[in-house]
Length: 246
Ligand SMILES: [Zn+2]
Image (cartoon, rainbow, N blue to C red):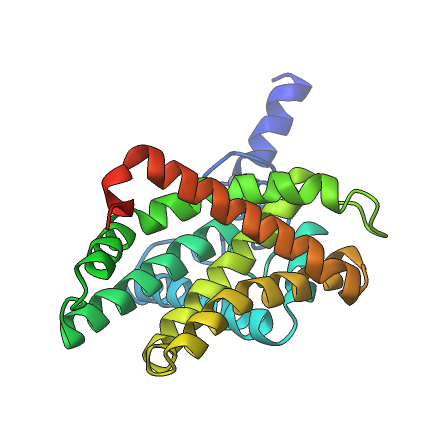
């Protein structure tokens, strides 16, 4: 038996079952497979399912909690590679947008269609295309942020701005979804708050990540926000001009 063969045989018991990488300890360092148990049993299967759920829950709660209290830190952690405690920003935006959609549906169900035909038409369009439009707009918003913040203390790449936008828009969707009944009661004040919230929240994030000053950040974020609104409104006008007819 040659040297190589004998070595292969000695390693056979210490290789990962999933990816065949050499094994050092309970978990495979290449793919993360657990080797704590030899055979599958019901307890292990249940434990595995439960662990996945609990992991998702603690991550979700921590992402929601930290984005509420210290949004800049979440983005900075994520950008710098401390990602284990947080949900992927794209998934976060998907989940919160879905939640906001459900909230709107629920409100429509409870209060019925808006009495005004013009408002009803816009609401219907918003329900149908709003989320898709948001997902088209977000990479664009990130691209607009890039030149405006290129001289910030901390310069970000497009994808890093995109992370801020995904977390930011996602969390604003979650907050407005939760506050929607309240905002509806406030009338014009509620509408104003709906507009102010994304600008204020995104500015808060950018100040935290790019280390810019508040008073120079808010006008720039506002500019980005207004430009994005104009572009998306233009897109809507191209796709469905009838919406604008009185
Ligand atoms: Zn492995």
